[in-house]
Length: 425
Image 1: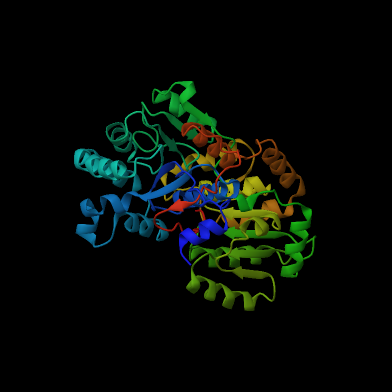
Image 2: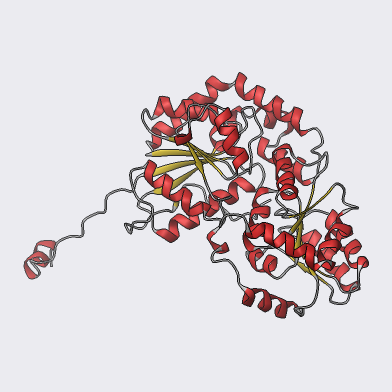
């Protein structure tokens, strides 16, 4: 039987029509630190959940510019990995001069760098371009103008504030997404008019943080861990790979008060998890070590306080859940995160410790003082409800001439290299 025979047998059946190709939004990122990748993962998940009538194409700046990576030539490691190594080992006291040196190198190489990005964009012809990549946005802006005249270029800050000059915000871009009033002021200072500044209700969070966990989540997690509602519980969360200092912090905190319970989120760090598990055996059920998990929201909700470095993602997650924080700020705090600790203190969201030795006492203050916890929870409750991931999708949809909340062909997925889930730092 031929195709013609089938046509004769079923004349009313017509071949399915191909759906029109979805417009693409080029999404540039760097994998220096976990926050940029986590922001991208959140956008991809939210766009897929909504079924946006466009899709993201994720582009790694490291991949596009890899052959020009001077740091790799010298060290054998890509610049992203060198940065991540500095963060993991806390070799960050002199990060500001290193950052300015990097920015000077980018400026010196701006013409060949721009040419590489122009070629990438010309091969894609995106409907819009969004950057979640600091330090490269002047080059990206100029490349978009050359490769895609008339197409919008937006910058999405994954930090609570900029660290000018030439870190996040650049003049003459179509739109910049910012999550704090400080960043709004910085955008104005960079020369952007109000209509080019999109003030979101906070940092972009993964859809798994919605809806906010209620009392039933708190109670359920505590039952899983063998904790009562009356137990004072502190969660320790220091980046997607944890850090060795968490061992001393857990020990110091447990020694502060026999009532204290500790949930240690070690992240993707098997050696740390093994050492924490050995330590837990000595404390007879008071220390609960956990490895990589996508239930950070639930463990935060089950805790009375979360101790962390002042990373924008983890901080935003804890505040969204409604749990007070203790953050550490000292000369090793990376420059773009110093404002975050100031925000915690100024808005009454938790405590700021200057050293690791101060952390156990600061955590203990919150665990033992119900009135203090109440004040911090009231400060958190006064923050706007964080709907940033959905707000960004709406504005991106407007940039490509589509409403992100309309039903349409299945979209919002990533094309290109997979975006592995990395916990926020």
